[in-house]
Length: 366
Image 1 (cartoon, helix red, strand yellow):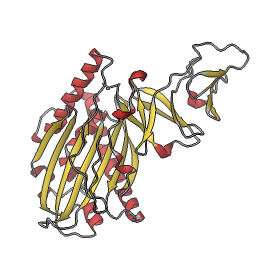
Image 2 (cartoon, rainbow, N blue to C red; image 1 turned 90 degrees about the horizontal axis):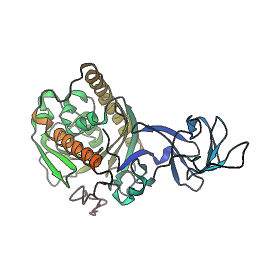
Image 3 (cartoon, one colour; image 1 turned 90 degrees about the vertical axis):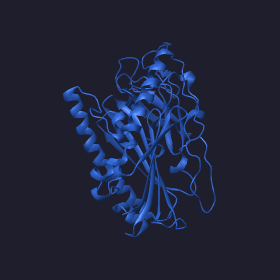
């Protein structure tokens, strides 16, 4: 069901402050917090004594005190104090997970601790990169994370689910524009669409401050096991020298369980970076957009559970990229099960080139 020896997003950096965050990840209860020195910590949210959640306890400085019998655990998981006795058993230790803070995100490694390598975190810097402005958010979806990856790799649904934000009318349906699918490094699937001389969807008209027709392009990118990026841009129709606006939308999926997903997202743009009203408008528009996806995916999950069927029941042309990603993910999970020390190799590059930043080119390698 899950690939284990890889990095997943556990939280946005701003979520970790003086408080603790309790969150289920890959079917495991996790307690997250930040030490007074700023270091992120991840515990299994389970006291080794009576197995109650440590999140029901109290944070004391950089330690966590269990709310049942008062045992105190240090950031490395070791028990520091047991009320009523001086001897501390070696087994009085909380399971900890490797975590690393990068790109404004808290990353967690749920597999074998000794295999964790922060260099393997994919380079997705745009939510915290100079020259870009992000509209970040979070949506909880009661559906299998693979259904959301299917959704993000086939953006033809925008016409029918997102007509009030990012979708074109049925007369100019996105599905009518051919999709070019490619696979790189054995774990990156890309689905590219070029849509010349098309009417701007409502959100694009807001971004461009114009209802004039546009040349639009977008590439849906999946990075195994569950990171997605929508790389897109627009310029005035039939004007190759016209001003181009580029955006990268991060869709960072972490399975909560086999039937639910943490969806961390951010619309990152390289234009009108100082426009705070625009930033907020984009955030609200994307929250509405992803709530529309949430509604549809949760209906789909319910149908799958009721029928016991698999998707797609009927395969269409638009399913090429989702099906390729499913096959790759299944192969990786099987390979890891057969070889528990297997770790996904470093991605050589996500993008060939980067959009102009303040008139300059910036190449970001993974």
